[in-house]
Image (cartoon, rainbow, N blue to C red):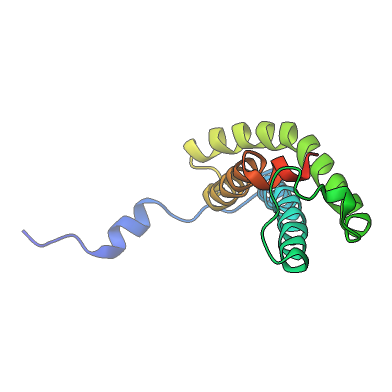
Length: 138
């Protein structure tokens, strides 16, 4: 009895053509990766810039971020990125549930944006629970 060829598996699951709905879903999931990464990067940049100016990493109320002259440059970016990240959570959650349902039906290839979005959200939540966010006090 000969071994099955590797092409028999490929023929059993032919690649499916992506329709507009699943393409929109995949692109929307990729777009919703940006807000948590933007907030994380802007807050981390402020923290590192403050550490460079102070000669040590700042911690809670030492110094207060509002006392730094760079605060006026970074605060609007950090605050707006946080607001966008916070507001994008509900649409991301709805799209995540939809994407998982479509992925289990094998009608969409959305595993990568789900994974990247989950990593970005976990990174942002990790920063929100860290000493950096406590120092910033947003």
